[in-house]
Image (tube, rainbow, N blue to C red; front, side, top):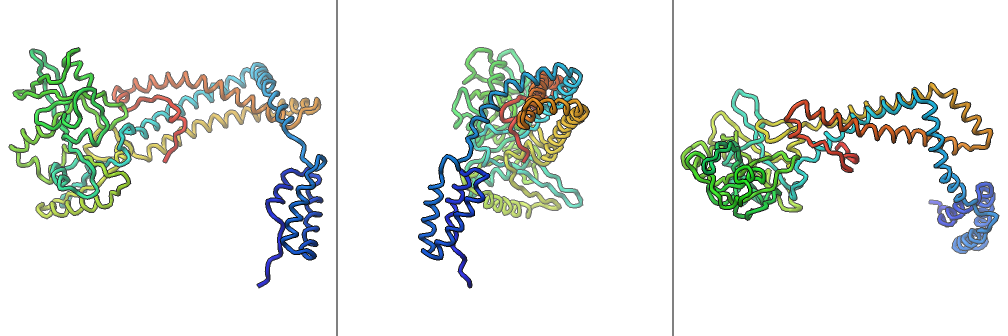
Length: 464
């Protein structure tokens, strides 16, 4: 195989091309390469490369160095003020063109901001939990003979019991149950209250800080009650709620903790939490169906995996548990699987879901809608600009005659476009606030699902 011909050092050639004037580069580079080939033949490749490097440095002289562009840059920089001053005069002179463009772009931007804020809210659900990236909910597929399978966000208490058997790969888990409601009696006063049963590990899995009470023990004992700040104020006014007694029907519950208000963008919301041990004591001992494998309608199980852990082993264990429990079932098959916490509000449609749910395709539809609206405003600007092209061509000709360069003309047009976009953005923000108010007025429940607050994260949002 023929050995390749020696070549001069690449870094030296790049250095030559960097500093040498364009009109001299071709001849100088050709001469140096010719000298290099001759030196390779007469003195060897290693010495030829060394001489080539020396020659490249030797030609670094005033007459070969490129013209410094800093002065051109400074000229453009000082012209920016002139660009915007001229653009302002042009916009004032062409009022109809300016108004149509600014209003059209502002309306599209306002709608775009509304869509972006909706998408941002949907993607921000449950972001405040410290273990959000390794928290999962157990979901259920309930299938009877001759019936279509039903996918449920809820599951059975039985799976919570089986998780107590130290399932490999599970760091913590918590068991919830909905349906606790009644009239809270405080002395002679009565307040309607709805709550969720939650076991003592609730605050280990979720980040709902307590402003009073111990999160490790607040939900450990039966008939323990944790209330939110607003609920505590509604029930007890300004007095300290800890240790207070609340009566539901004939049972007394003791307030063991006060939680901060649940953030708006949380799929799990509550006014109060009742210890799950209470459900065990009041229903589990009396009702045989409470722990049945097919009682999957009101119970929810969440678990966390260790940092850096995998859900593969956990899912295999859940499949094994499902197979064992289904052996005792007739004409019914119940299987369980894991759903990431971040996929609850933005995931597949499930029955018995807690909080809002939106399928990911909705984000793409909303994003496409915003893109179409923005593009329509851009096309409107382009069409109007083309309609004025004859007048602008005369303006460009005059500028060329008096000595303007192509960069100056381009800079002028860019400054004009930037000024229109900036004015439209200011107007669009006011329109967005109006649209936001009217959007909330469509349905009272909308304000419980969305906050529609603009932030830097909203502006940098990407659709994954």
